[in-house]
Image 1 (cartoon, helix red, strand yellow):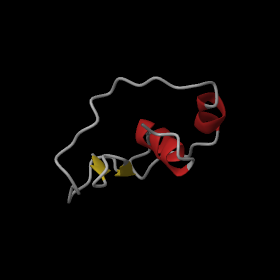
Image 2 (image 1 turned 90 degrees about the vertical axis):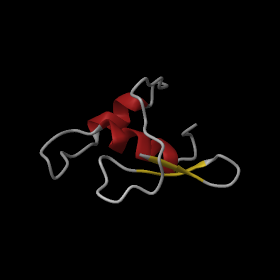
Image 3 (image 1 turned 45 degrees about the horizontal axis):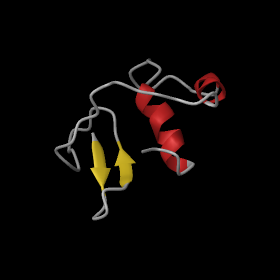
Length: 67
């Protein structure tokens, strides 16, 4: 789920939250630059034991590059 501010800028993104902050889901079509390789390399498995694409997207958000 993705949350936007009043200017439609992404302010948070969560994988399967129990209490979603919005009604906006991320449909699953992604385009990344080459930095995705290093971002993915540093990922750790989630509590579910999976590598989450949401964690990649969160890193882009943290860097101010998620649109």
